[in-house]
Structure formats: C-alpha cells, structure tokens
Amino acid sequence: MSKRLAQAVTIRDHVLHLVRKEGKWSEVSGIKVREWERNGFRAFLNTVFNPMPASAPPISTPEEAILYQRASRPQPNQLSVWMGGKVLSVEWADDSTPRIISFRRGEWEQKLLDMA
Image 1 (cartoon, rainbow, N blue to C red):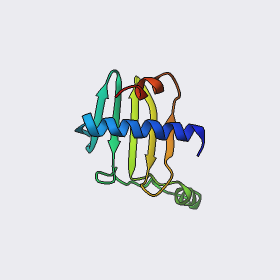
Image 2: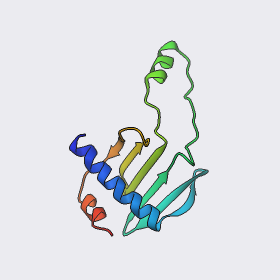
Image 3: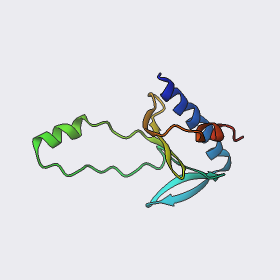
C-alpha cells in the first residue's frame, strides 16, 4: 500500500468513526446518505445499503463498448470529504483495497485527524 493510500485510509477510518458517532441521514440528489459536518468539514457516506443508481453511458461504437467494459466499476462504499472544495473521495468494498478517486493533500488532514 502506498503512503498516499495509507494516509487516505487513515483519514477514511477516522471520518467513518465521526460519521457514525455524529452523522445524520440526508438526501442528496435523491439518494439517502449519511452526512457529517463540523468546523468547516463536511463528509458524505454512501454504502452498499443505499447504492448510487447504476447507469451506463450511451454507447455508439464498438470502441466505446470496449472502453466501457474495461472501465473500473464503482465500489459499494463511497466517502467524500469537503473543506471548501472536495479534498478526499475514496471508495471501497469490504473485501478489496480502497480506491482513491481524488485526494488533495494539505493542512486539513491533520486538522481533521485531531478531531475527537
């Protein structure tokens, strides 16, 4: 596991604890998610129990079909963390290595990890 992925997983685990402890259910774009907010941070957790709707892009050529088949599929659990803009987006399945969608490194990491 790379240092970047290890740090993203550490942050994910910490935020999951905060979301479970202080989060509330909300609806975002018609999808029920668990939401947490404190000190300028905001996080959204989507789990296998409330999955994002599956949608396939329009495919008009054999090349597009091949690209779609090779594209990685979204994992059942997704966490997004915002501080102003999105600073972390990670997804995972319980039986696989987490995948970083986006991770903007910065001082916010330690500020978030310092929250109890």
